[in-house]
Each structure stands twice: as structure tokens, then as C-alpha cells.
Length: 395
Image 1 (tube, one colour):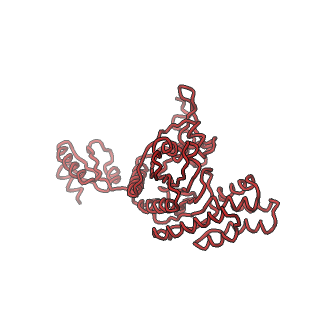
Image 2 (cartoon, rainbow, N blue to C red):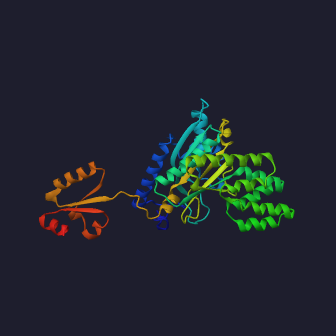
Image 3 (tube, rainbow, N blue to C red):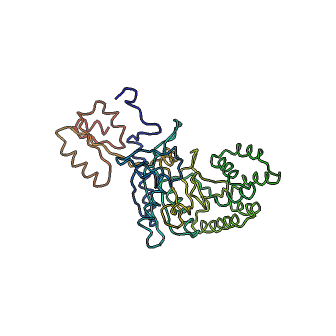
């Protein structure tokens, strides 16, 4: 091993130290329990998948895939997302009865970074997929579930932005005329580069009326009134159908009682090419990126020979932890210091505390050089090292 790489990690990889691990575990447990209460069943898929199946079907860019060869010369990839592997499993083994299916997952995904920019190449997602149900009710369900799950983690300051990729595509095609022009303009939306959007718009050979319509499109953010405004911009039938679905979704979310947690933002788009309908992103506090996102996709399962629509969401655990900040999401820990002559007494006390589901550390006093510094790591410390030391500790 060269000294150059002795303490280094591959680009974008991170160590998870004990304190952060405990926070992640606590958040993960709360999310998973909330999801299970809604009837979703967790599954696991392999970390490695074939490039020709999951790798090529995924919407993640090819340069972000970690690729390697197996002993037979087949190209493999570290899974870049979880939606595509679940589509593979569902299409091959779980949708034979042609019934709605509710699946959940908690897994690490891998996306290569081209340069160091603070973004992880490995991160954990927890999410759900509601498959084979085309109703707007299932869209409302996954949105309400995402809100409920985030609340269960203790997150207070967050909101979901909801749009519809079908409306954006139809409006842009209606005005711009070609998919190439439409795709170029949508890229600015995905990057949240509204200055670039306006500058690019001015360079296009469009009438002043059409340019103004595309500028007005940027203002379609807010409450229920946004949908009515959008009807004034769109003329084709598919675009209006998308808005009607948003109107229906609005009623469903009101019935769930989560309307105060959502806003409509018709400029929301995704880099995931398989999305075909309602899209949403969750933002919290001062976190600069979405802590979670989701939406409806209608063509992904066709790549695995199954024709059905689905919707779901994924929460980025690292970004959720950032949003939670210093919130107390860890259970307090106890520490029992003991001397050899009181070892048995210490062990019995630890057993009683653990029966009460209290985290308890046993520490031989002779193994600690700085007792005061070590004690500060724990919320409670008991000293079983003889009468004199115990009395001084109680003082």
C-alpha cells in the first residue's frame, strides 16, 4: 500500500462514524416503521446488476455508472437507483396476478462522480413503489405517505412541490415545435437555472407572444390557483388532461389533510427520463437540494416485458439528516464504571438497565486514562469503584 492512498477513499465515498451511524439508524427505523404501517412490504435486490438489463434501463447517465466485469466477461454495474431493480423483480416474479403491488426498500445506491464537489458517490435511499395502479388515488397515497414518514422522523420545516411532466412536455412542444428545443429548455428547469432559461429563451426564433407565454410559465408556482392559471397557457388535449389530474390530486390531498404541506410548482422536472406524469420534490430548511422526490412512471416496466404504470418516492437519508440538524434523535446512553472487586455488581446493574431497553456501557475503571473526559460521552454515569469514590461521585 502506498502512503499516498493509505488514508484516502475513492472519489465521492464517505466513512460513517459511530455518532452519524446512530443518527442514520434512528431515522431509518422511523421511516421504515411509518412505511410498513401503510401496508408496504420491504425487499432487497443485489448490489450488482447486469448492465444490459438494469444498467441500460436505468435513467442514470452512463458516465455515472460504476462498471466492472465478472469472471464470464459480463458487464455488471453497482445499482445506480432502486426503481429499476424493483421494476425487474416485479415484472419477473411479483405481478403475475395483475394486482396492485406495494413495495418498499432501504438500500445504498452508487453514482460515480467525475470530480470532487462534495456530492457522495454512495448514498442511502428509503422509498416505496406502488405498482399496477393507474388511479390518481395511488399518486395521492405515496405523496401523503412521504409527508407522514418525514413527520415521523421529527422533521418540521419541509414542503413538497408538485408538478406534472406531461404538462411541461406538451406546453413546450406546443410552443417550440420540436423535441430537441423542448429538451434543451427543460434542462435549465432541472438545473434550477432560471437566468439561463430566460437568456436561452431570448435566443429562440419565437414570436413575442410565445416568448411571453414561456416566461409566464415560470410563474406557475403557489397554491391551488396555479392550476387555473396553467389552463390559460395550454391548448392541446393531453396538456389539459395533465392539469385535470392535478386538480383531482389537489382534492385527494385535502382529504388526507396534508394540503398545508404541499404547493404546486409546474416548473418541476426530473433528469429521470422514465417519469411520465405527476412529479414531486421535498425541500426542507436550509438544505439546498431536494431531500426526496418521486412521481409516476409508465414505461419503465415495459423494458422488462410488463405493461403497467407505477408511482413512488425515494428519500435521501443523508440530506434528511442534514435537514434534521441537531435534533435529538438518539436515545441516551448509560455508562457503569467498575473496579474488579465490584465487577459482578456492575454486570447485574447493566443487565437490569438493558432489560429496560436502555443503552448501557460497562467500563473497567483501570482501562480509562481520563475518567472525566470519558464520562462526558454519556448522559448517565454510575461509579462502582468503592465507597469513597462513589460518595465523591454523588457529590
